[in-house]
Amino acid sequence: MNLLDTNVLSEFMRPQPAEAVTAWLDRLDPEQVWVCAVCRAEIALGLALMPAGKRQAALHYAAVVAQRIRVGRPISTEDAQIAAIALAHNFTLATRNVCDFEGIEGLQITNPWLAGA
Image 1 (tube, rainbow, N blue to C red):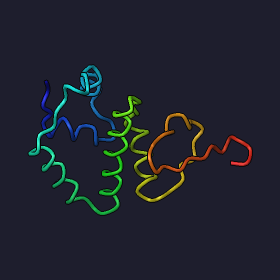
Image 2 (cartoon, rainbow, N blue to C red; image 1 turned 30 degrees about the vertical axis):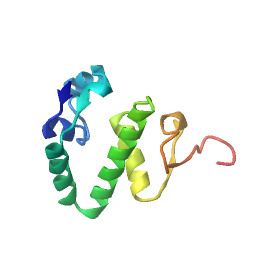
Image 3 (cartoon, rainbow, N blue to C red; image 1 turned 180 degrees about the horizontal axis):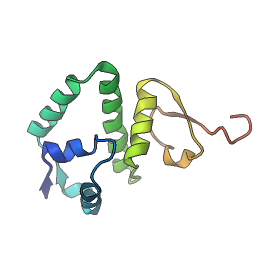
């Protein structure tokens, strides 16, 4: 079992998380990773202190990553951030890589490369 400290959790909110931390977490069984209430509270405080626009995107980011982990379809940090920003602003995401974003609850996607998109 692994209990993640707040600094490990917040690493994934950085634009470029440390590769070593990402690789380490990727090797773990999700059933063996835990977050305690204290760390959750620290993250919640950090989110509450953010400006409203960034706060909404951060909350959507967490939901997107959690959803993809639950269904066994990991998502890159960058794609999760892009999806979160689209969700926070109720935007339709225009992408050629539709498969990277399919199944994200509430996300509207369009592929400009397809006729009639």
